[in-house]
Structures are given as C-alpha cells and as structure tokens.
Image (cartoon, rainbow, N blue to C red; front, side, top):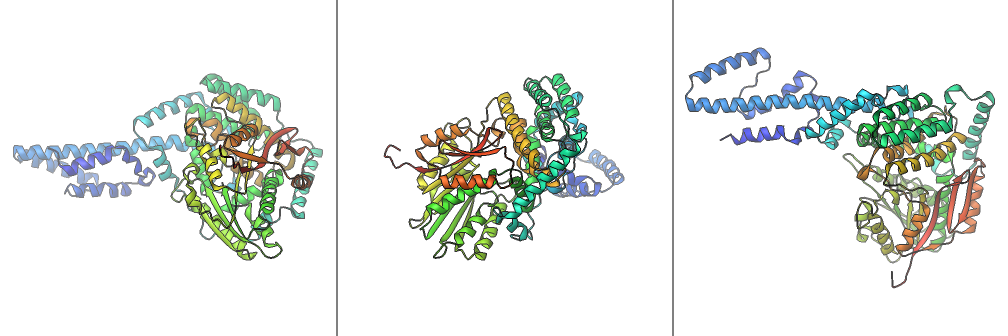
Length: 601
C-alpha cells in the first residue's frame, strides 16, 4: 500500500491545483530547487542540488537496493518510482504551463498596443499587422493549443489572476484636488465651453489644410468589409475571414478617423472570436482597467463631456429631478445603482449646500458589481472617501455606504431605509449589466426592478442607451457596428485625432464594450442592452408609472447642448423620455418613474 504522504503529494501535483503555481516565478534553477526541496524533506530524503550529486546518489541508491531484502527493496522501489513520477509530472506541468503562457501572452502582446496599457494615458500603437491571430496557420495552432489547454485541466481564471499581478490602487492617490474640482464642479462654467471651442478651431484648421492620407478612410467600403467579415467568422470560414480581415487591416488604423479606429477594434474582436480566445482577451483588458488609478477615468470622463453632451445632460437631468422632489426634505437618501466612480454627486452636494435654510442630511448608498481581483470593493470605498471630502468642504451633513454585490441578490434590509427620509433611486446605464430572462427563468433584471418597488422611492431616475443586444451573433455585430459608427463619428466631429486623451476616452469607454459584444458569447457577455421602448415596456410590467419630463429641465438641457457643441446633436422630449441623438439617430434617453400604488401590483 502506498504511503499516504506520497499519495497526497502525487495528487497535489497531478490535479488541476497545479495551476495555482505561478509558472513565471520559476524561470531559474535556484527558484526551481526551492520548490523541489520541501518535497524531498517530506519523503525524508536529502535534497541534492547539482546534477553530479544526483547521479552519484542514484548510483548509491541502486547499490543499496541490490543489497537490501526483497521486502525493503519492494518498498524502496515503490517510493523511488513514485518520486520519479512526481518529478517527471512536475516538470511536464511546467512545460505545459509555459506553452499555455506563450499562447496567451502572444495574444496579449499583440492586442495590448490597441487596447489599454497599465497607464492608459500612454497608450502606444504599433502596426496592426502584428496581431498574429490573422495568420491562417496561426489560427489552427491556436485552436489546437486550446484543445490541449483544456484537456490538461488548466484553470484559466486562476492562471490569469496569478500572472496578471494586478497592483492595488495607490493608497496615496488624491481623493480630491484641483483637477477633480475642475471636471466635477465645472460642468456649467465657461472653461468647458472654452475647451470645446478650442478643439473645434483645431478641427477647422486641420480641415483647411486637407485630410492627411493616413486618416482617409472609405466609410462605405470599410462598413461592407466588416459585415462580410463578420459573416465569415460566424460560419468559421477561416480562409474567407482571413482574406477579409487582411483587407480591413490595410484600410483601418487605430490612429485614423472614426471609422478606421472602429474597424481596427472590430477586427481585433473578430480575430479573437475566430481563434476562440475572446473571453481571455476581454479578461486581460478588464484586468488592466481595474488596476488603473481613478485619475485616468477622470481624464476619460473629461474627454467624454468635451466630445459629447450625453453624460453632462443626464447628470443635470437627474440632479434637477432629485432637487425638485427633495425641496422640503430634511433627510435625503440617494440609492445609486451603478455608482461607478461617483462623478455625478459632487455637483449635487454643491447644489444642496446652497439651499435656503441650510442643507439637509444627505445619505448616498452606492451599489456596484464586484471588480475582479483580490479587493473587489476597493474602488467603491475610494468613492466614499472622495464624497465625504466634498460634503465636508461644502458643510453638508453626509453619510455614505458602499455595497458590492450582484444586484439581484441585494435584500432591502441591507439598504437601511428610514421612515423620516425622502428616498431616490438613481440608475444611469447600469441595468443593462444585469442578466435578463434569456439567462435565467427568474429574470435577475426584473428582480432588481422588484427591489426598487419595495424601496418605494419618491422618484426612480433611469437612463439607457437605445440599442438591443441580440442572442444571435450576426445581429449583435450589426447593432454594435451601427451604434459605434455614430459614436466614433461624434468624437471625430469634436476631438482632433492627435489629441492624446482621445485614445484614453476610446479605450476606457468604447473598446471594452465592443470587444465583449463581438468576441464573447453566452454568459461571458457583460451587458444585455435593450431599446428604450423595450425598457419602457419592462418598467411598466414591473408596476412603475412613468412621469412627464419637466419642460424647464428640457429647456436647460438644450441650452447646455448649444453651449459649444456641434449643431448636429439634438435633444427632444418624446413619450416622457428625454432623448439625445446625433444626425437624426436617437442614441440614448432618460426618464423618471415612481412605483404604482395599485393593489394589483
């Protein structure tokens, strides 16, 4: 019977738990010896460092075995054979791990120049031809490599987590400074208008000098190539997909105009999908975003409100509605589903501080999904620190609570609703990240709406993009292409292509959604957006009553859009939605609801 210690070590090394080891750490012999030595000690054997020592010991062992009794010989041979097996399998595991890391790291190396670096403000782009997955032979190698990966039982999630070495947010990062104040408290002042006008003047100057050759893109031709390429990828026609993607590469550029930049990102997503590594690609991208400090998201947010009025208008729409319904309240409780970095709330705190008779006590409960990594609540805790600092500086009594959880699993008791406070629920572009009935019979999305009804808020403010997410890949690809063609066109109309933070804006706010929607499938899809009409029907079924849009708020929002933005933007009220769009296309909308009090609900 095998010694239980030997049996334990064998199982430990041969099972899937081998992926817990960080293969990158064992590149030199000394480190490998440190790993092997404890197992020798467990077996009660002397650890031999050099090959010569091992050869001498092997000869001595053979001599000892030949002179020992048959029973002792049998046991010794058994232990030696087991140990040889363990060492052989251990080294084999390392070699397999290296092969796997080579596959994934090649993908990351080829892709990272066109996604997000550890420092998103310093993204560098190389020739798009370096994305090796476009090569026909490599596609086959990737496919065969993946089969080998999964047959060997490697846990991609653990290996990815171990090798990413995600750094924590710098504890010394500024909670609030002049940069934050300029962006978060200056949405209505002359500085933002000046920045927008300055960039438009630069665009006009570039236009007068002629369009550089490197940013000349045939929109219709690229659009057609992308559609045909998606069809080839959908049927796994690798030869056809290869030909079309090569043509797209020749005509697209991560530094070009809007359609060229979009085509470059979509080509990456299509190639990753075709190779079957879309989920790994997306996870690496998100891992880099997670370890990026808040200041980079602030820069991206700043560029977004320069490029387009969408976020600026929705913050204004939400805050005005909150101020209206809490006008006479002494205690206000805002529950923010999808608080992100809390960029909306400093301006509300500032406005509340100016109330005649003094500000009310303000409670904010910020709710978010867990972030990947070792500290899933780190970011949302930082949001609380920042908001407390703003409340302190404006002399607003303040309380903050952060909740990190899957939204449908939150219980109303966790929210600590008090009878003497006016409660508001705010959800801007967050519900689309909650799974719907296509993933579970008991729709998580409807369960969140049921929770909001239980809260009985004075008002529920809801904003969403106006696009759906089909379960069928080709339909979903066309929806993504159509939506982001308009969005990249908007950025093109406002921000010159050489502005450094334009890449930051695209890589933080656009690229992750594009990659996920195109390269991933099934439960790996992070978002499931719906059209505004679909959201309206869903909320009505959940027993909410839609409130009319305040015409004064609409008027002020239109004034914001006229404040330096391109005249091809539009804002209008329709069917109790405040709609925003570009060139006649509705991009997104916001509305307000309150729970119905009917007994039937």
